[in-house]
Length: 280
Image 1 (cartoon, rainbow, N blue to C red):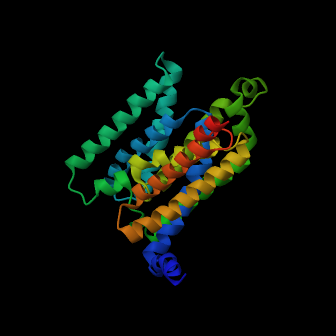
Image 2: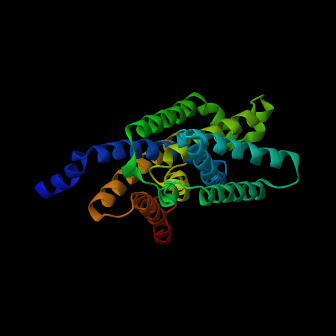
Image 3: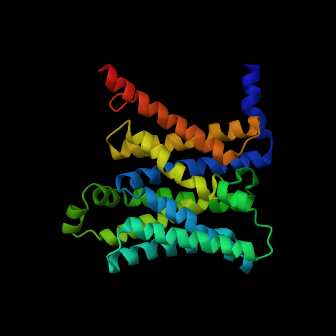
């Protein structure tokens, strides 16, 4: 028991770990809750697109001497709007528009970083550095995560109806386009909040994997969001502990834990489990 207690408490003796745990909790819950909506609306690729699109915003923010959260949010929202514009005003389908926009944005970010003298650590941008979260970063992450949760609660009915039956939502007068762009704004917020914890490359895993795990366990959206948030939270905490004690990359550890939960659910879910289905 003493050894277990020491393993659990030892990381919390450091301030940087305390900030890391708080940031990971916010991101884990926020990604889990929002990820449920992305799965139902078949927008997993959109999460990938916006996560890659924030890279030029980070680089430009560095050039202008402003916080990278600001630049990342602007480019993330701009990319989401650009995808919507291309889809609505051309015969290009949404999946193709997503591929075009996120590849272009990511490439622009790489070009900017490669041409400027900077101390930007590309590895940390791509894969996260939750142990480097500052007090200011934590405040911004918390604000963004709080906004995502509040907006989800306030517009839950509209988001739910437009996700399950967009035709009916449109017929009763709901502004489905505005709801879609609200979701894209929330997605941009949570992606930016996730940069320090899991990075650009791995954030899509935290957006989709906890939600997919919950999707295998329930058919109710409210329950799915709660379960997804719990899986995101636990994945973040366990991943950070593994990162601290094993001295491995924190973002990758968090994603591996989240994926482990998904595999367990895929195999043993009471209704959808592969092994359970075979037994029945």
